Amino acid sequence: MLQARPGLVVRGLDVTLGGRPVLRGVSLDVAPGEVVALAGLSGSGKTTLLRAIAGLLPAERGDVIATARPALVFQQHALASRLTARDNVLVGALGRIGFWRAALRLWPRAEVAAAEACLEQVGLVGLGGRRGDRLSGGQRQRVAIARALLQRSAVLLADEPVASLDPETAEGVLALLRDLARRERLVVLVSLHQPDLAARFADRLLRLEDGCLRTA
Image (cartoon, rainbow, N blue to C red; front, side):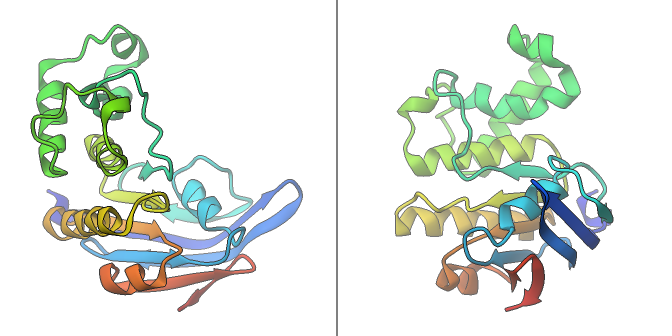
């Protein structure tokens, strides 16, 4: 059960890119059901931290402790425009069904049903058959969140998920992340450059400065 899963623990994380230290001894804890926002100037290391936690970047030292590999929602949602919303969500099941079955779209019925359930969770009932390039910006970001949910991770990372959205749509996406954290007992760590939105939708705000994490 999700309630039995521990949260996210990061201890002493150091990351160097191109010979330049980007993260220096970063440590944080996020509890199940909690939304924590990361703030910081461009280049402060927010994206690097999320990618390192997700296992997409190597760390020189430090530990990341989570029950499963975290799911990452990218800033530009990273959808395939020619695929339907449903097929984009089903990409989240790749780790379970394998690349070739996915390439041939031989999706198990249970995974298709789970993808539809994830679309319902993010408020996109009935849009599973719509192509990615025929969705609005807010709908595409919701599809990206549904894809992350289908990975069945207890840890959800979001890298500037509302940077390119209008204010009303941005609020809707952040409200969705907050509601999912509460309802599903997910750990949610999200980077934001809008302090007003962070104050309204996050339980805590942390700031990255010169590769170090501080309480905002």
